Length: 55
Image 1 (tube, rainbow, N blue to C red):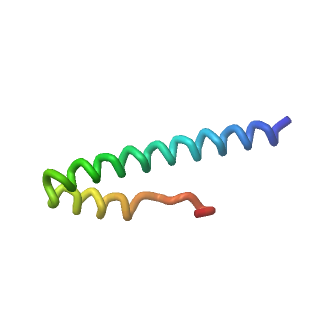
Image 2 (image 1 turned 90 degrees about the vertical axis):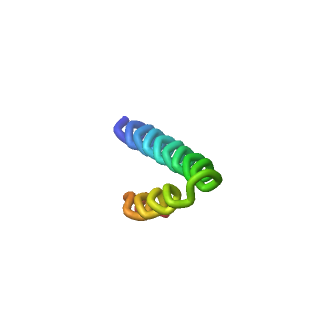
């Protein structure tokens, strides 16, 4: 059943993407408290990150 494979790949992809976003958000929160300059660079970098087509 190839459809099951697609669903599994989508789930893994979404989960990885979510964990990446949570990680970057945590880093941003940490750097925001200590160095504002670093936070600005991180924000600019995340803007260029590819987003999911369905969001």
